[in-house]
Length: 67
Image (cartoon, rainbow, N blue to C red; front, top):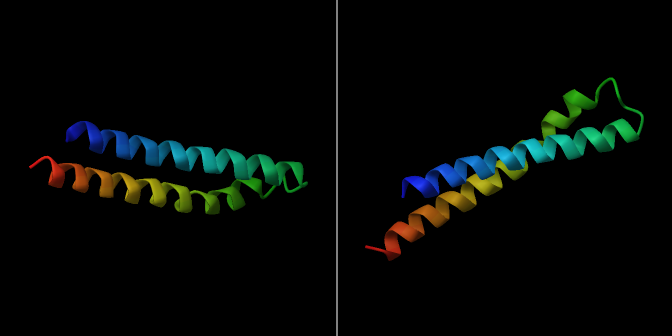
């Protein structure tokens, strides 16, 4: 159970970092180098919350089915 929680949190953090990198790269290529960092921060919550919710549901359902 503890391993699932760690994997869930790690995947959430990795998804947020990946979303930031992709958004920053796309904004820099469009010429918004000065504000790319600020605007890329807005891309983090979506994927992070998705994988956090997915991992939470998997953790709860796995605990439910194994009992």
